[in-house]
Structures are given as C-alpha cells and as structure tokens.
Amino acid sequence: MEFDVKDQGLADKGRLRIEWAAQSMKVLRSIQERFAVEKPLAGVRIAACLHVTTETGMLAKTLKAGGADVRVCASNPLSTQDDVAASLVVNDQISVFAIKGEDKDTYYRHIHAALAHSPQITMDDGADLVSTLHSNRTELLPTIIGGTEETTTGVIRLRSMAETGVLRYPIVAVNDADTKHLFDNRYGTGQSTLDGIIRATNRLVAGSTFVISGYGWCGRGVAMRAAGMGAKVVITEVDPLRALEAVMDGYQVLPMETAARLGDFFCTLTGDIHVIRKDHFEVMKDGAIVCNSGHFNVELDLDALSALAVSRRPIREFVEEFQLADGRRIYVLGEGRLVNLAAAEGHPSSVMDMSFANQALCAEFLVVNAGRLESTVHGVPRDIDRMIARLKLASMGVVVDQLTAEQDKYLHSWQMGT
Image 1 (cartoon, one colour):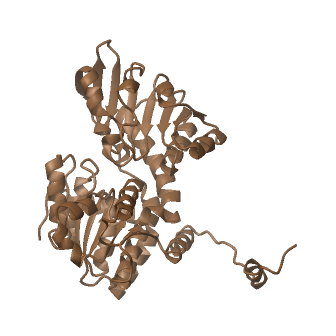
Image 2 (cartoon, rainbow, N blue to C red):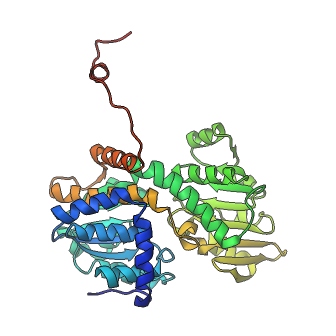
Image 3 (cartoon, one colour):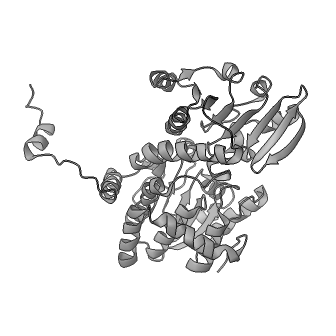
C-alpha cells in the first residue's frame, strides 16, 4: 500500500481521536453501517483531496466500508492532523498522502499520488484536485464518472470551469446543500475560527474591534461568535445585499480603508484575492492581528506585508511578527492559511457529520447515475439534503410535526384561498 505520512507511530493516538469524533457523528455512522452491508461503492476508486482531520477519517472509513478503494491527500498544507493520517494508514489500510506543514512541491506531489490509481470519483475541498486533473492529468479524465466539492471557494472555481466549457465531468456542489452551508459554514466556521485565533494568541476578544471581511455564511458565523465574546464587530463587504443584512444584524459596515485603522483583529472570509493589501497594512495600529478563514491564503497580500517589513520573526506557534519601519508590529496567524485548521482542529465533529454525510451519499448518487449527468456543477438532490436533516434531528432526539392530509392538500391546491 502506498502512503506518505509523518509518523506511523502516531496511529494509536489518531485512532482514539477518530473514535472521539465518531461519537458526535451519528448520521455518518448510520450511513457507514448501511454501506458495510450494501457495498454501494464496491470497486469504485475514489481520490479525496480534503482536510485530513478526525472527521475526514470517519468519512474515509465510511467510503471504504461501502467498498471503495480510497486515496486521501490534503487540501491545505497546514490542515493535516498527522496522527489521523497515520491511523488511517496503519489501522484502516487507507492510502494517505498528507503531512502537516508540507511545502508546495510536496503538496502537489501528494495530489498526484492520490490520482495514481486512476480514480472514478473525486472529492475536493477547494478544487485543486480537479484543476490538476484538467491541467496536468487529462489522460485520467475519461474514466471519471463524477466528483464532489466541499467548499465555497471550490464551487466558485468549478462554476467558472463549467461556464467556460472546460469542465469535463459532473460535479455535485456539496457546499450548497442546506445541511452543509447553513450549519458547517456558519456554526462550524464561527466556532473553529475563534478557537484558532484564541489558541494562537491567547488575546482577549471582549472589548476589541473585530473586523470581518465577507458576510457570507462563514462571515456570519464568525461575526456571531466574536460579538458573543464581547467584541465590537465591523463588517467589510462588496455586495450591497450582504452589507445591508450585516447592518440589519446590528453590525457596523465600513470600507476596509477605514476599518484597517480601527481593528484589533482582522479575519478574511471572502474567497477572493488581496482583500487585505498594502495600503491597509500601512495604516493598521500597532499589534493588529491578521488572519484568514477563507480557503486559500491569497486573501492576504503577504508579499506586500513582507516588503513593508524591516524584520519578521515567529513569536509564538502559528504567530509571525512583521515589524514596520516606524516600529508598528502586525501579527499574521497560521501563515495566512485557514486559521481554524492551521492553529486549531477545524470544525466540531457534530457539524461535519452533516457535511460528510452529504459527501458519502453524493458518492453513492454519482455511482447510481453514472453516465447520465451533464458535465457541469449540480446541486445536492433535495431528497438527500432533507434525509440528512431528518437523521440529524433524530440523532438529537428532536421530533417535528407532520402535515395533516388537509394541510398537504391546501399546500398543493390553487383553488383554496381566503
């Protein structure tokens, strides 16, 4: 079995941490149990480019239980949990190619290793796997029946590929499922981002000015948590509707050129490039803490900050100090990469339960519908989304009402009115 992990000796620690996560992933566990009996993925080769965390470990084990031949690589150089990677290799005989802190060359070498078994299904988080296939490994495309995409940034990239006619196989946008973005993006990103910032800095959030760039579901989540911890939250946006929503939610909305002078903490969650750039760094107060919780570190113009700095040094784990010519210091967390995974453990297992239930069931959906789907970006089937919601509610002991026959008839009638 091929693999490349940091230390196989970490496998027992990783196994225990996966078991801990599994306790909060009852929906995925129920799918795993069914997959083990029915084998809906028997013989299917899957390449998964995801954050290698305890929750991803549960997903990989579920796919293997369904009969799949799974290879896993990291979707971010700093997001791998090395003990989890070791456990999947040693305890589950799953090929993993991921090491926390790997350089760019190793990162892409691992992607190519995950593709070496000529996958039929891809699972992506950010679309690096898909873009590698379409640019460097086109010979593998004819055997691929479909793929899934986990995050907003990846969906944006894939829709661009589809709109320009270059996407060669169908992709299901798992990110767009209600049971994903309404919960994972909002509650998962909100909690784990604050967790990463606090672990890295041990700074007090209460009483600070916390600037958040982007008021999508992820930005909403971080704003909720920062405000809940006592921060004065400032939102920067380019979308007037989202900016209006932020105002109605009680936050101050400012352009970044103004907010840059005020913030104690800055966090970008836009999916775009150079959201915080040279002119913003130039006016930040001494001690400003800057981080990113969007998928790629390009949201921060770190080259510009480096050019402004007269010195730079690591001052804490996952904290780098940039000192400017006038003595001001700016602190960047986790190399500008996803702070919730670089400096913490990522989303709580209970919310990833729904996200990865979508991944597993969409893999099954792609197998059942092989050859029938157009080469574009598809939504998660509504019945899958609603089934996951029902399973999650049941796992939480929550009971909801059912429509009466009369109510159902009313909702499907146009004759009945006032």
